[in-house]
Amino acid sequence: MPHLPSPSKPMTHRMKTYVHCMLLLSAMVILAGCAGGPSRQSNDLTVEDFQQQFEADERVTEINERLMMMAVEGAADQVYRVGPDDHLRVNIFGVSELSDEYRVNGAGEVLLPLVGPVAVSGLTLSEVEQAIAGAYDETYLRDPHVSVEVTDFRSQQFTLMGAVSSPRVYSVSRQTTLLEAIAMGGGLGGEAGGSIYLTDRIRDPESGQLGTRSVIIDIEELMQNPSEYNFVLGDSAMINVPRGGYIYVEGAVNSPGAYRQRADTTVLKAIVEAGGLSFEARRSNIYVLQRNPDTGNWEQHSTSYYRIRRDPAEDITLSSGDIVVVRSGPVRAGLSTMVQIVTPLRLLGFRPL
Image 1 (spheres, rainbow, N blue to C red):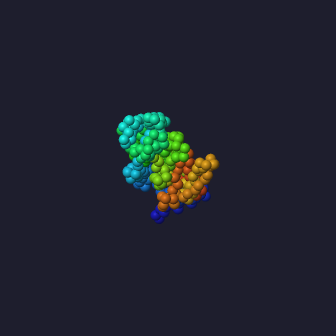
Image 2: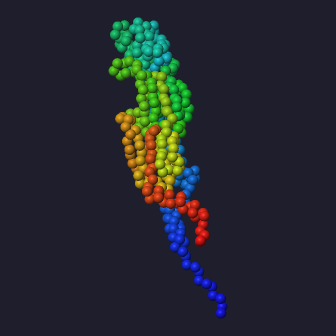
């Protein structure tokens, strides 16, 4: 009789349990792979990540273009205002003895014969003519006719410093606005923060005295409401555009840490800088911790990754010191942990006992 192969030995209970476990774990690996897609290192950029980073760089260029356009549009509306160290040619019709060239001193005054000091700093040329005519009309002349011109522009200097393309001292021959000054400096630099600090000397409209003005202007508000925030520069203006501080991204991202804050930094851009969301990240709830500038208290805001990806207008703009917290979802975190356990087992292979 032909030799028949002996029947295979039945699998032991231990072998069956091992095979079942391996099948279950393999199925979970496949599900995890389908849900999260292939893993990638934080330094590998997808097309979407590249587009978002490109848009972040382009945002600064867009801001500069808008600032320069607004500066050009508003330049024609400005009139010159006299300031310290300007040289004025004063002509009083019919009185050559009083007509001469005078210098505006540090107090913003011109010293005229007979009448003494007359405050002129911060005034337009027509206002200077009225001030001088009024000073002589009180005692010495009847209805004097006065004309004034600037022969040497010395007062219109401003200092531009910080995160701008060309920080230095600028001299101009007419009154200059904040937008024009930034445009002259080549626009904002790539590391510019979200604010502009302006310090100069202007004349109080009620008392007529020169005083120091110090203001902080938000760049976005300047672009949206130039009629309110595009100040005409006073004497000895100093414009500082501080570099952005840092925002912090923690939790379920590929590279948590501190990142440079710029004028246009948002939650989505911060996540991109942090290498993107990790597999276990909870995408439906991303938290932003921001300090209230008025009270100093921390406030928590929430958003959705899906929402800000779908509509960038829903994205939250970040300021220096803000914290973005990305928590892990329990299901994804469990799958991620299972993958870490299964991967070494799969590499070992299977050998029946």
